[in-house]
Image (cartoon, rainbow, N blue to C red; front, side, top):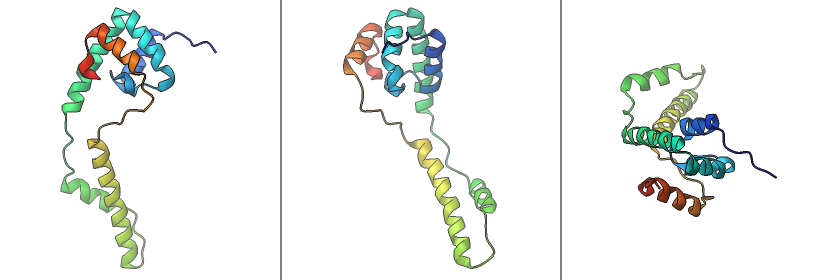
Length: 133
């Protein structure tokens, strides 16, 4: 099975969607993207710009949910007419959703186990970005 070479538009789309860290790129496209990156100075420049944006985004911390947001979520949660237990369950569900959003916004993404270290070392030598990995 022959692999198609990475196109400039697809490489830019990978950076836009997944950021500069190649460990976040789809496994099936990673090798072609790294080869493209190693062979193309413009790609390295684009990756550096994406890395700068990644650093800014990683440094930003989401604000905790306000009391007003909590009240709106609870107010819009479906409440069935019936026992207080059902209302409690609806409120608990809304609170769980809110907690899920907060936790999801604060967690760092996990990297897949299928990382080809040799590719990353070559990339690091190429552009001096070893600290990014």
